[in-house]
Length: 443
Image: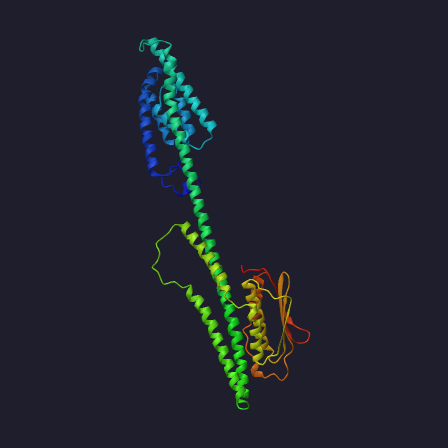
């Protein structure tokens, strides 16, 4: 009974109830020695009892051979040892049986009861045998010494194997407990590593989504203005050369701005790249979990740091001026006292207005747009509304759409705990509204 549970069943390599082959060899060897001992002692037992020698030998061999079953039925082995004690047999069987019983996982009360029976049986047999030897003249000692001899003999046969078995059993249970705790800790570390990897993957996906939104905002807005200016340039190239030159300069400026912003974004991506390294050596699972958690936190920290470099509310006037320069009629009003907000809040507010104006370029060319910005005590609200496009709007002024503008705006706003609403108006236009908490910060 060296192991228990599923681990013991998994480690079983021996025959029958033995968990290892060497355990089976040891028990069979002990059984043979015990059978030989009890068989030899059976000769004297047969003489004293007046039985044929063959009967005493066979009885001793069968009784001693039961020691082979000590791991399977330790209680039965101890009971047999106690039963043959009056016949002065089974000293080895008693010692090994008590050790196996004490080292097993049986309740302490059962172990104590059987050990007490063996102690009492050995004590009685020793005293009776000593008195018989004194009466027959084989032993010449005082009668007062007999109890001391009996107690010493019984304790010498019973106490050492019992105490050793209790110690080995306690140590074995301690080792099993430590092994189970180590397995449990390994499973927990593996689970933590998997969760940390999931968090790192989630952070990477969030970073990809953020970069995709930023690139969409930059490309869609700048390129939309460039297309509008190019269409105007084509219309006035022959009629008004000066205006054509002005529009061409605006297209160039917007193209350079778009390229600058795209280079900044690509620079952020390339800055996080590291040179290739050789395959790392295997590391403990705890180090894997710690590294994965650190990677997830670092990815979140880089995302928050990069968000600070985005546009702010102070650039809204320039954004509106660019839209007006493209020929769009924009009416902007600001309510409340202007103040600074968290970088994520200002960037989100700017991107919402930018994308809403871009949608006006795409889907309602020539329509008038109204931009409203309200600074409140605990929040900032923005609204971009346009009227219906004029019927005379040129068809080539309408730009293709990927359908991601409104989705990106809603993701930005809800990520900061804000509210986003968009939809058509009764007048035939379209309205985009968003409210952001003043103290919000990116998750």
